[in-house]
Length: 286
Image 1 (spheres, rainbow, N blue to C red):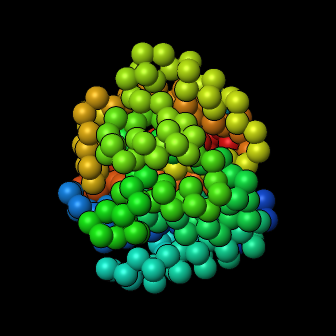
Image 2 (cartoon, rainbow, N blue to C red; image 1 turned 60 degrees about the vertical axis):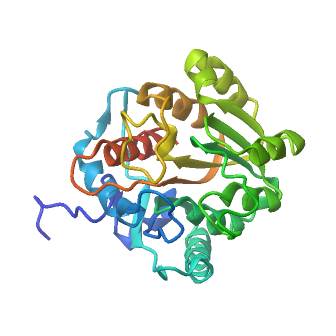
C-alpha cells in the first residue's frame, strides 16, 4: 500500500477498510440522481464534488476544538436509473437497509432532494422520527408539474410517513404549501427569523425528543455561499449560522442525515466546499 496517496473518490476522514465497520458510526453513500430538477441541473455531480472538496479541511476542527476521528465508511455511489425515480428509490432503499444491517447510520450525499424519501422510508424509526429540514423551500406540494415524486414534494411524502417535520431557513413556498404547514402543524422558521435571532432555532432543536434525521438542502444557504444549487433563493442563511445549528443538532439522537442539491460543476466551488464543511462538522461532533 502506498502511504502518501489518498483516494479523492471517497470522503476525507472516512475509510474503505471493511474490517473497521464494527467500530464505525456512519455509512456514506452518494446518490447521483437529478431527474426531477426543474431549474439548474447538475446535482448528479454533487457526490463527486463534495468528496473532492472534503480534502480541503484539516483533521483538527478548529471551530469545535476537536479532531475528526474516522467514524465513517464510504461505500461509494448508489446505482441510479436516470429518469426513473421509483427504480432509483428501490436501489437507495436496499442500500440503506444493508448499511443499517451493518450497524451503521446512513449519510447520503445528493443528488436532488427526492433521494431523502427512500432513506427515511427504510429507517425503522420513520413513524416516530423528527426530520430537521434545512432548506429555502418547504417542499410540501402534493404534486409538482403533475408528479407526486419531485424535489418540490419530498417533504409532503415524508409527512405522510408519520414523521414530525421542523423546517429551518424557509423563504419560498406556494400558498397551498403554507396553508398545509399551518393545518398540519409543520413547524417552520423563516430565514430572516433565524438570521435575526438564531436562538429561536436552537431552542426549537433543543426541544426535540427521540430520533432525529437531518436533511440539508444546500439552497438553505444564501447564494453568496452556495450558488450552485438546483433552485437558488436570495436572503438565505450564512455558514456561521449553520455552524450554530450543527452544534445544536449534535446533541440529538441522530439516526441518519443527508446533504443534497449540490450542483457544482468544478473544483473549489463554494457550494461543494460548504456542503463538505457541514458533513465535516457533523462527523466531528456526532
